[in-house]
Length: 432
Length: 119
Image (tube, rainbow over all chains, first blue to last red; front, side):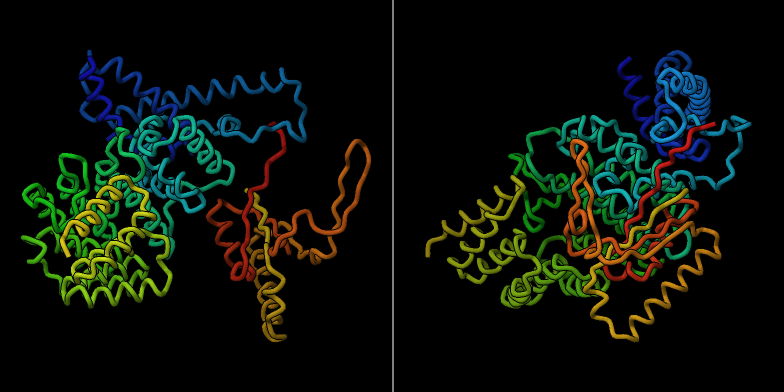
């Protein structure tokens, strides 16, 4: 039974975006869509073990959920006038609670429950993504909503992934959905220039989800559902929906390439292993080839953008036999291009590290020291950590230890803290 | 769907403008208002006198007190507003972005709460 339920759970998650997208187009209310989807999942859990999983579970769930949504609207419409009467409310100020429930009763009941899709396949899922990643919502809310509705995760799973209590996450989702209703955030496809802008916002959310799983900030003792896997899945859905967008392809390639190295990033003791020390035999070669092929396709689609460039850099790293055999000259060139397309202190930092690999630690240190003088990255542990390693390579040991100390004061991930402490100890262990 | 567009601005932004630039800003406001009147989205809108003209009234235990100055002292203050009636938040944001002061401080977009009873 639990096996069947587990399987059903996978199906529900895989179909979440499709079902909720279709329900949103029909009813225009996310709360109603979610409740009706939940109803349909319950029916599925009861009937599928006996009847078997339908051939097209998405269509099945959409039909059942649509009928449940209609039931809910009718029930609500019948209940509300009585409630208003019972509460002794009179028309006028304060008589109308501005709640999503209220607007539910206002929804028109569609004439035909089986109205055919008027939009091209996938458009509703895209609309749902654009809705969840609307810039009027906070970044945290965008992430939570995307994981909940498009990813099909439960509120409890999202709460666990972000290390917050479940009621906090539930509250975050409720607030976001309330804002969608009250501010009338539309369920539409952005047009013209706005499409690229809004697509970038969706890509940013997916990347944020991936990085949260990849960097594993905060404490490591809590079991987290796999955000990396979820982000890779979202990127695949995006590629399916926007196959001609070069940046969508770029992000998909980037995530596949990073994810392919995931197993090698942490050793058996749970310690972080940097790229140059990773056991390349643990890398997923097939996935790297897939990622690299997508990156090539992205770059030939154009126009070039930050995700494609980062993906191209990741492909060079992932396809190199060793750190020494890496094409650092091309990586330096790609970082220079990235600094032009999407300038930022972290890009400059990575550029400096690549320069050090191509031209030696002194040249890299010059880039990092200029970055340090600009103050753009002050308070971020990665700058002193990178400086420390270059100083170490230059044999300037006391300066390296001082830079490690500075990095240790600023780092917040326990894994990175342990890694930096080990590096610092290694410098001290070398006899002068 | 009705939204209030609250224009927050720092008076310093305007005092640094030359006479010609100030004239251009007024002309821009005129053209903007004209455009949303013509599109049928304009409901109402006015500039406000400066915060130095503001008075706050409070009633405590039935007694009224009056104090000079705005409700909150901040560098940026409410300088004017528009109420627009448009299809969705996306359109309201498009409109708000065309308000000249959006380039200096910011325009807050708030949906109006509907207080009418369902019939």
